[in-house]
Length: 307
Image (cartoon, rainbow, N blue to C red):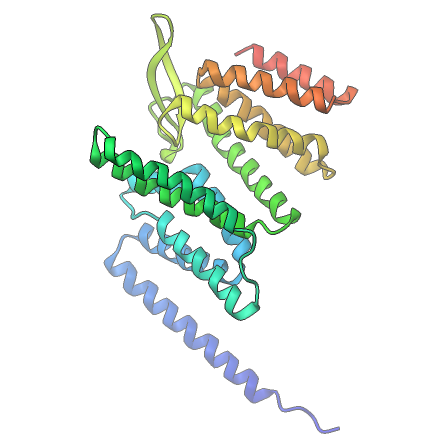
């Protein structure tokens, strides 16, 4: 058998990699001479995320969930004067879905009903323009709705199976653990004037009667709305703690449940707190905890009563 001649191909690959590295280094060096380093780093991360999203659109779905739930785009715009990343990323996901359809014969499925429901709701909102007291604000609300509606349809398209749903659930738990950790640390340390990169907003507001105090508002800015979106994450994290087989993931889910519940309490939203209690009661009714789990819940309840 004649030996295979792989040296030229290997040399060509090395040349390509070398030229690419030189080109990338030149672009980075040129960019650093014009833009602040933070913008260059952000640009490189954006390119990496774009490439990964096109190659694996399900990872793009997880990124969309994180960006949307943490309001990362709004934080970057308001605190760092950066351009919005939400709308370009939505466009990138649509391109990735189209590429999968064209090159891998994976057309989007089961999205018609979701698109119809979003369109009908959008029609109702559009008709409200005819009697809106403030036309400009109504138009802004419509623009935001179409972005949110498109996100909903994209999520329906990309949630193809159980494993995809599981990964999305864990990404939401990670988001809840992150925002909850920031909020709990902020409240316990009393550092209410520190915005924590935009994820730790807090304001001096009425709590009960004539008493006032700082209410945690996370990246949202509104403590009641923040409590509502954190409340949604509580049963997801709690169910993962009850059903997860991996001990490490199970403990992380328990931690996430704790900081999420504390965050809801620290917003001083009475409605959200009552909803949290009702949620736990309903969950225990349909899925009674085991004795060892019950002890954990009792300990968590005692810790929560201290606050």
